[in-house]
Length: 493
Image (tube, rainbow, N blue to C red; front, side, top):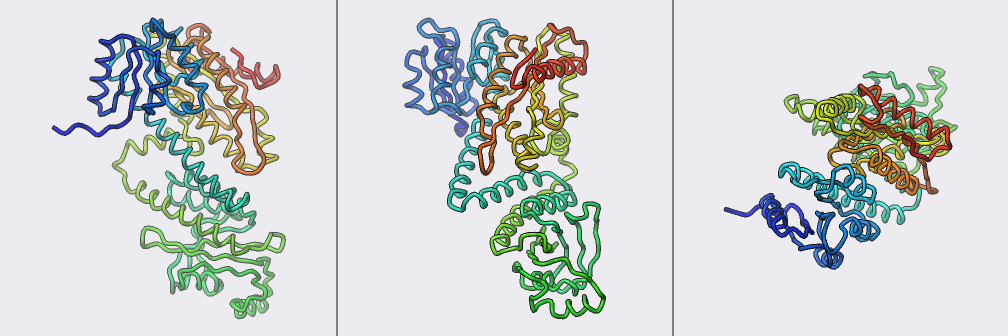
């Protein structure tokens, strides 16, 4: 029988030799590469030598304190992205609060259930790999941005936003999002998508930034020589001035005869193909009040289209795969901008957690996180920067949360984190750590640094006496507003 391929390297530090053998047996059976250490005296040296993907660390060991080791590890930049799961026979409420407060990614009580242990380890390994990939990609893009300059960096970030937003929407929604986003980043007043093939007499305008209500408007392509040329050659067409370009000689005669006042000054017609059949043109225009389009705008638009075509193809495939119910359920429960659970999913899962507290006499905490003066970000840096802050804040919350926690966008600039099996003290410690991490984080995706703070309201069950999920959120909401009233950038319970 062939041994399973290694799925991750795990370092286990525990003074219980019998437990060590058990953990090695279980984790190797799951396909992991496992290194066991009897105690934690030489843990830092072994971390350097082994470079594990995840550390499983006992809290209570006779020669060394696991929590002191955890603090030392989390203060070392070399291991800041390595997931650390603490295990202990200490009371869960105390151990959880102390572990999370020092930066642990999760806590597992002894004796543990094998399935739960394996599931939590797998979840943290996936999260660690995703975080590392994101960092690698960010470093790659940052290096490219340094070469291309600040303006190109803004545009590269725009492509990332398009990837994220268009990855799971229906095609007609994607058309309108693309038209709006590209128009905004290029500061255009007119941007539309036209579906047509080379040789067609008519085209179909499926989205227009200047008219969001427009759907499937038929146009005569003879009036649009730039679109015809883009379709026939398969290459982008840039017209810097439609009032002087020879391509428009016949069309200008028609304009004069009809008394048409043309406000368009420059145009880009950029062809694309979808699903190996549908073809069309991305149609960008400026007026006399806009900056004229240049060759670098053609290059940027081409990059956007390359990303968008792949996303639209995925959307077609997703729409036709009606049997893939799990995927549709996931989309229905996920906030498109941040990737967190949406309000509907939060409501369903929170009801279940509240019921579990009542049935089994457990504890439950809830954090309501609200960005301070978020309107100022949109007003001074623009809505793209505001969207970037929300997306990155969602990433931070998911990264700091445990696998059993629920992270949801509650609405606008408010997020909710539900923390099972955690009392008020543990939740406040966790919230304070979040507050500090967020305040120190630079949210700028381009240009000058961008820092924000958050106010966090904390509620807990059964200590606060809430009887329903709505009442529970209401308590956290009142605590959050108390933090706002007392000067913002605070945690209140």
